[in-house]
Length: 383
Image (cartoon, rainbow, N blue to C red; front, top):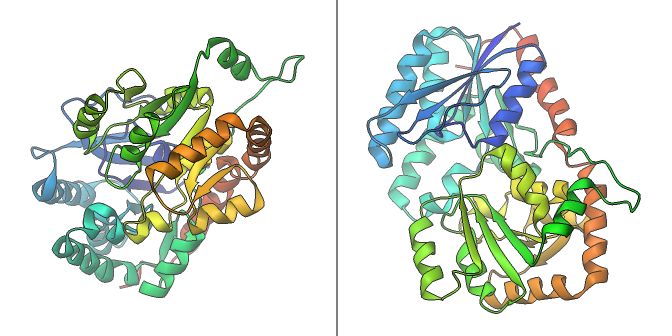
């Protein structure tokens, strides 16, 4: 079977999406290697049915990191055994694109994000122009591409003239066995252990994620704790904010949580938060993986009323949607779900229905078809 290399800039440990994708491809018979970076505090890699490779970089962030990592990745890809290379997002596309062109291998682009529209880029016009040039150099010359939702596929096709398949970033189906009362083992355990309501945010503690608004909101909600599963650029700033607002007893920073542990953690929550600020089109058109994770875990969520979320809410009422990201709106939504038990139970029940549809076992079928198409063609990447 063909050998595929997939490239990211993280250290692989917490990348649930790539772990799912690579596992599916490996089970489909492909030889797979996932390539990322090695950090001083990187944990030992877990065993998966695919190879994993970390590249060490002297620089840890900023322009020099991207430059160094791309150079190291270029030379690694130039000599690595492979039949195809898949770049995940624009930050690994240049070495991937040029080495496949030089070696006459198949090039694949996986657009996990609308990279030129992420908040960290939108606020820096010069940097944004650099990424836009990279996108216009490479994506129109890409024959095989996929992304995570319909909205992004349509935008990319209109902007670059390249057709994108859609493979949603959905979680693996959660196995559930019920007792005589109709409760799952997790629900029974959580009911016994829970002494307060848990408001869960899972994901990076970065700009535009609504974490500051959630921390401000918890001041007005005595009957709940806010759990933050993740770290990011704002980790220290948010910890200082918690101290300033004197809510250290009700906000828990859980740090980085490995996917297997997060799988156990999420069902413990009463409410999930998915509060992406409309700051750059990436968040506006996103179908956040945390939104689908909450659905699969049977946890009603509070979201922003953006196109991809609205599509699902119109079909399956699994949570609430806010028009604006404001602290008061977050407070009202949380209080409503905590007090209106009939509504809460309805949303929870609908999560179970939606979880049968928005699940990796359905999405991976599309991924397999996509890669079968890549290797059924003898054509080389478009020049």
